[in-house]
Length: 109
Length: 115
Image (cartoon, rainbow over all chains, first blue to last red; front, side):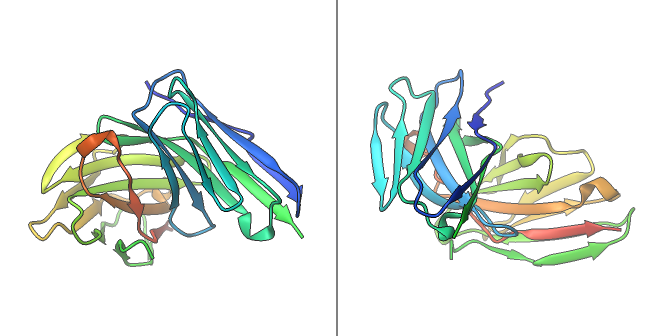
């Protein structure tokens, strides 16, 4: 069974701090996606990474796919209250996505 | 706005009842996925349809069923409802299965409350 483990589960920081969240698996994925979900709403796709070692930047967010395509990280620089939400990683395999349980981020002003 | 629509937004019903949730995928998307999200279980994959055919099954109970129609919209039917079925139900769609990249776009969800 393929599993994606995300850490930390919860993160509460002050505005302006930097943070990194992780997504790890023992399985290889053909792609990995990061989503952000706000309470009561659907997950919103942030990025897809496909190549081992790939780094993608989205404003203050930096996403990295591990060389072996088994893990990924999301780094946020100078976090803002608008970054608050549940961050989910999802690995692509055989036409489906395997989701991690997410990291719940709270950024206090 | 992801382009995926779901109705209804909220649904309150009693135990033992049956409900139908509806999803319209993004224009041009052939795959539809259904997920259940409850507080303690995270996002659980239920079932996938591709161009009208069932493609994959996840943790879907026998009391639940789904179908995808020729116009590609999909319905998720939940029957003999129990209190534990209360959750957010999401539909997602994707272009297909090509190239090993499976970007899914989620609808706003249906919040089901079983009383």
